[in-house]
Structure formats: C-alpha cells, structure tokens
Length: 135
Image (tube, rainbow, N blue to C red; front, side):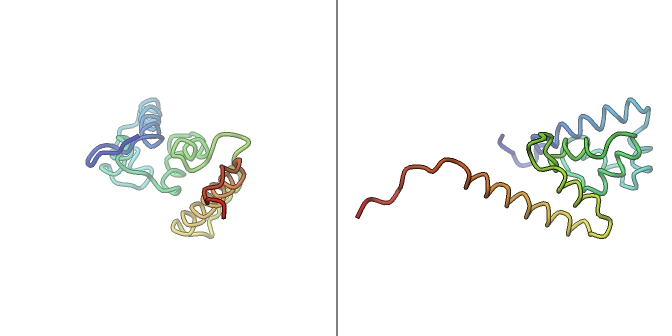
C-alpha cells in the first residue's frame, strides 16, 4: 500500500488502532481514562487509535493489561509477531518479555531477527536463471 504524507499509517497499524478502540469502547473507558491507566498522553493514545503512531512493545503491554486482552494479540496486530505457527513467534515474544532489555535493545534485536529470517527466506527460494552471460 502507498503511504501518503500526512495520511494514516496503513496496514496492520490501522487494524491495531481499530481493535484498540473497539476494546476501549467495550470496556466503557474514555480515551482519557485509558490513557491515564496506560501512562501515556491522551493525544498519543488518540494517534495510536487512528493509526498515526506505532506504539512500543511497552505501551502495548500496558494497553493489554488495562484492556484485559492478550499482549501477544496486540503484538500480532501491531505486526511485531507473526500469527502463523510455522513462522517465528516464540523468539520475538521472548525478546519482548525480557525486562532486562531496554525498548531500543528489543527493537534492535527484533529488526536483526526479522532481517535474518528474510535473508533465509530469500536463500531458500528456488534459484533464478543465471544473470551473467556465459564466458
């Protein structure tokens, strides 16, 4: 999908925001009440719900706790963890759950891990025809 300047972040983030809003309304919480419980500002939470901001794993954990939903479900909706059993998941969850790591360290590890998986997927794909002309 194309991301236009000034428009909402598209993809899983939008669905995360929609899901969070649904859960907040089901819990009969105002935006301000949920923001207070989570420890974030009201405008920041509003931006998450509208798909303009991607929350950190820490904020997702606090949202899950406040809304009484699974943190893993929020990670999947945020695109941090893949829902497919054949895909990675336990490694990502272990990284996110480790309280000894900073948020920056968690994000760095998740990025490195995702890049290794992508590289391995490319390597495992059938080899294309050679691009170099024969000598």
